[in-house]
Length: 145
Image: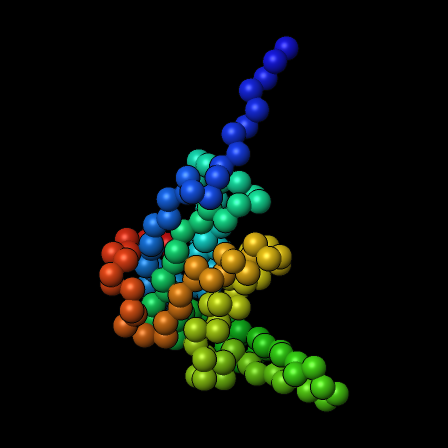
């Protein structure tokens, strides 16, 4: 019995759209999982795991994202300089104060593949701490979460 093979999607057949998400009052993890899904193109008919077929996402009001429980004081973010004794740490409240866009970027990066394709996917994420963004020319559509 013959079966039809699945048609491979080509890069020039992909249509990308722009979405804007308001993070004000949204829970960080739930927001990040929805954004990661859109970035990877999971909702598209022609989605393929080996091709970047996702859309662009703009996240505004990153400084007003909500977290549950005592994460504001207990959740820690770590980074290392690569030198001995180079471990730096900061809790969520300090990261929100200094670089609020890193909260969402870090959460979404944990939900996309940790490969070259994942790094390409993350380039389509644009996060801004306030209301203003520079992508009005792309005419982004509002994405409800």
